Structures are given as C-alpha cells and as structure tokens.
Length: 282
Image (cartoon, rainbow, N blue to C red; front, side):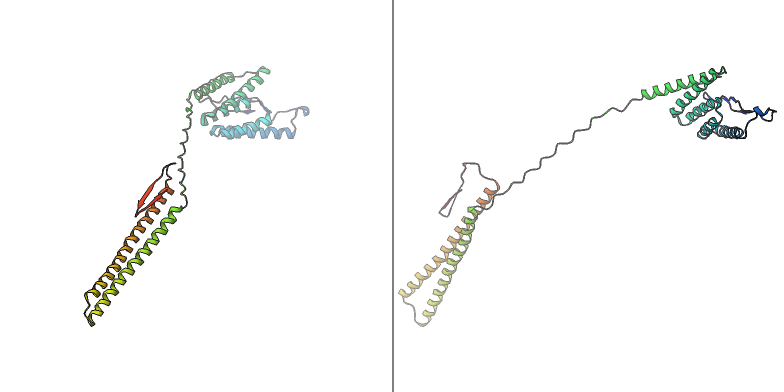
C-alpha cells in the first residue's frame, strides 16, 4: 500500500493519510488482474508520491506541491488533496503569501467533501480549514489597519516671472542729424577761422619785422600793422568762440534726442534748450 508519512510540528503541520493503492503479490483471478498499463500508472504515481514526500521533509515545498499534483493526476487519491493542502500551508509559513493559504483552504474543503460523500473520516481537516480561515482573516484585518499615506496635494507651480518687455528705442530723429551737423560744422568753422586768424597775424608780424630791418617803420606804418594784426587775432578768437558754441549746441542736440528716444516725454510736454543765441524746441 502507498502511505504518506509525516508529523504536525506546528499549527500547520502535516496530517498523513494512507493512500488506497494496489495490493502487491496477491493471487487474483484473470478478471481481477491489473493490466500492465495500469501497473505503470500506479508505479509512476507511487514514485511521484515518494519524491513529493522527500521534498516535503526537506522543506522544498514548491517541489512537493508540484510532485503531489502530478501524483494526484495519476492516482486520483483524495488523501493527496490533504497532502497538497499541507504543502501549501507550509509554503505560507516561509513566504507569508496568502495565496498559499487560500489554495490550502480549497484543497482541504474538497478533501472533506469527497470523504464525507463516501462516508469516510475527515480527520482534522475541518479544524485545519478553521485555522486557515482565522489566519487569513487576521492577516487581512492587519493589512486593512495599516494607515495609508495621506494624499498630499502637489505644491502649486511657482508663478512664472514676467519677462520684461525690452524697450524698443526709436530711430535717430531730426535732432540727432541736426546736432551732428552743427557739431561738425562748429569744429570745421571754428578751426578754420582760428587757423586763418593766427596765420594772418603771424605773417603780419613777420612782414613788419622784415620791413623794419630795412627802413625804420614810421608811426603811421606801425599803426597799420598793429591794426591788421589786431583784426587777424580777433578773427582767430572769434573762430574759437563760434566753433565752441556750435560744438556745444550740436552735442546738446544729440543728447536731447538720445534721451527722447530712450524715454519718450509725456504728451504735451515740451523741452527747451537755449545756447549760443539759439533756441531749440522739441
């Protein structure tokens, strides 16, 4: 006979049931003899059962489950359902996966139904189902009691910093061109008048000196030279003054137009610049 051996070392211990199997070496009538194919099935089932029992005893419960299932597929022995339930219960003790307990509950329940339908004893299978259901309920209750992390609303995104709109400067106006013309004209006119005056005065001085070396200059002639020299000097200083005034006026016009293009004046506001006898409204 095929037998299952084991013990109940814990609350999920193994209850071992004898498996009904073929009786070996008995005299049988030809009608009762087992065919060679059936004998092979029984032998394969016995082998798988032995391998499953060995794996179970070694704590290799995944292997034991696979072997017990293969043996049941051949032998259809209800006791193997019990053994499968025990293997799943032991696997749960290792990995704490409730799927093993739920499968064990199904196997024990089916074992009970088959045994009761044939009037056979169910052993402690009902107690095992009760223990498993209590364990499953306790685990599910503990899992439900674990506080879930509070949902934290995401922080609002910071408001985008407005990008300052670059101020578009107006193109140079009439004042810029006028100022540039006045400034350049002042430089040229002032320099020209000053140079002409100083050069003329120098020549007059040289000419008077040269003439005086030959014949002493009369008072009338000396006065004439002095008058011409004074006019030449006046021309030179007038050129400097006019040139300076024009340069200042031109620079002022450039500055005023630059300011206006950078920061427009308020509507209706009028600025006035006065210099060197000239007035400019803008």
